Image 1: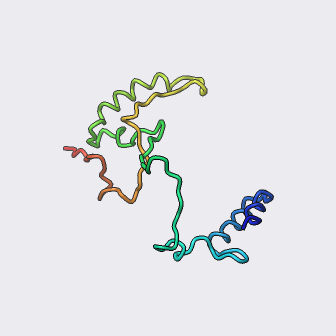
Image 2: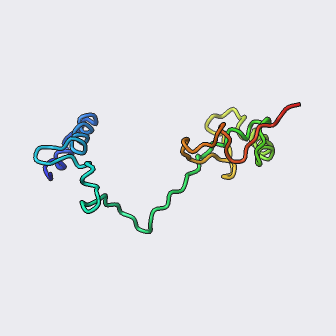
Length: 136
């Protein structure tokens, strides 16, 4: 087992290293069964060891400079929509300059998208209390 891990440092080809690691974890190597087997994770047989210093906290991260797209659409009712569109107009001067290395925007966190799981979307794609405005 120690030799297997030591040999990894001598493999410069990522595809070859990946193939060896996949074989180790899923098929096993000479003299050792696969690392990931259901029997290895069953009650009383061991488990996965993790390093957690103060428990596990999963918090969605903000996607920098990526406002929620619906905020641009005045046909959608979003609690921050009108406010964001006014804010965006105030940023045009910093975006419409001739020096590509100098343009910027500073979008406050409250307008930014956050990482999410697309499997948790509500029916019809409605999230965050958003409703479509009905035109008359």
